[in-house]
Length: 223
Image (cartoon, rainbow, N blue to C red):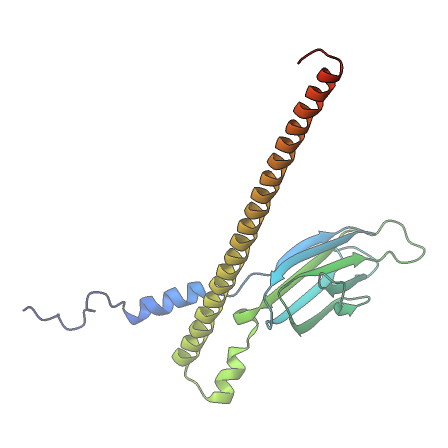
């Protein structure tokens, strides 16, 4: 039986640099979102987030070069029920954090404010870096508290990411089961309604036959 050559990984085993490279690609940081906010305008960003999930974010609103007025906009983060999770008037730069209580659609809205006594406000540049789940965790602080090595930190991050993916698949499976139950319930109701409709039509047709027969007999058109 041939022995593996020294320094060469066995079949099915990836070398450590390849694993680290793959890990860096999988758990790489997300890029912030930037867009132009016109004067007297309101723009919102929506995202669905699971329950019990940490959400953090950083924002920065800057006036365009050459503008005499500084940035002026309001920021409000709400859920689908309208509950305010974060609000800031005259926001320019800051951070926010909150933990979701249930799976919901969350909305971050930026509303431009026009200063009194000025004309049209030029477009403002809005930069939003919003993270949730594994991305929102500060693994540098975790490494300092638990005294973890860099490789252990990456393994911890990969473990959290794997758990997040498993939870996503479990939620998708649950939603699939709910949709299947809904479809089966709808099909059953349609079947019962179809049977009821057929019975009504048969009963109506039978009544019409007997009624017309009595009518023709009364008119002596048939015996």
